[in-house]
Image (cartoon, rainbow, N blue to C red; front, top):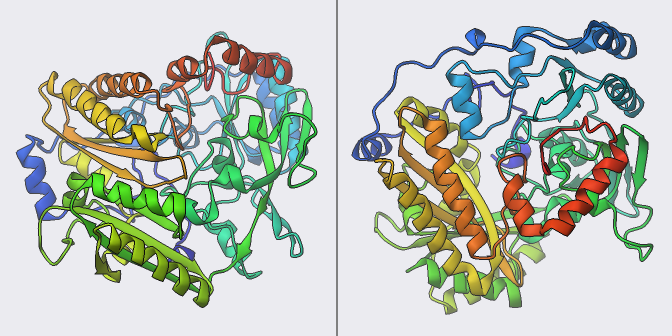
Length: 534
């Protein structure tokens, strides 16, 4: 099975996946949780019993939206509102599992064209109704929980009807995709033409093209295909003041690149309705391997060598000692035929047969020279096929009395070890102070000539107030990241969780620039209020 064989998964409001695709914990994982003191809680409160806020939306707004879109595309139904409440972070899921749907929108609208999106924004601006752009719903940083403030109500603008491959330019190798198109659907449509986008984040089964753009997504194959923001050639954006069209050439010296201003804006500046992206011939061959290094530091040296001097695989990833031992993507597998210790590097190669052979041979020589021991294709293939199952384990972990959450950052190679140690120590100290034994795992999943990302997974005993429990740990991690001079987010975005940290990272003048942009395109301040900037 490959990513091209996966299907769209309809998210369940209080699960990472859905009831048909549960994640089952192996016995070894259950024993490890018991050692942390995690005990299964009472069954969670079913979502249909979630308490919704009383709808505040004026009837004049509801009527105008139904006239504009058709009644069938405007919903105030209980389940629809619950299904558009928040995103996929642990606090988001925990709140819904406890029956708290207080952030639910008052209505959900499904425009079917760019012009209808503009019309929705016109109506909501006139009546000062907040609008939350919504696609796959996979935000993990509070990007779908706006501040209601004094608004007359909140509308979730779901882009799921904007799901077409508009055009393909075979000469330029670009494609225009509407932003409600799911990642799986986009790959299927492009494959029919012999192409791939090559973007496979862990949320791939649920996420959309619009979400990729709005949050500056980075997929597993970023070493080969680049981050999503590097793939985008042009955008069409609906704002309360009208339409913005960006990208008339691959590169330009005509002033600042405003595409980069929209990318990562998380719906605060407008609703991205279509993007023009670079595409690539579908690979003839895909090979994944595992390599064992004695330590995380040794593995990082090898990754840096490949990132700086090549040859660079399409996928390049390093798990630390703890993550290698736990191996959430394939908990039943053991690295090195049962040997303990060491760190797992995963390499992946895509392209023509000749390209794969050449890059694989060159990269293998570098890895071997720097102390790596090849484990063959089994660990690499197990990671590739298991990585999409990994998040589903979160649901089973919750049910087993554990709290699991992730966070990520990026820095320069010279600062990598300092940052990893600081964040790990800060999270562990914050959880230990609350009497919560824990594991903190880390991996590098995206590399550059000058630096790399660090992605942390935290598993701990769930306390009586898991939201407050994680908030203390997250605050400690944010402070450590800032103290080390790293970025508050490499690919998860800002949302509300990272808003204050972003302000510190950018400084007051730069934040004023962002506020000025928002004031210009969104005078009434209706777009995702409180997200990205205060």
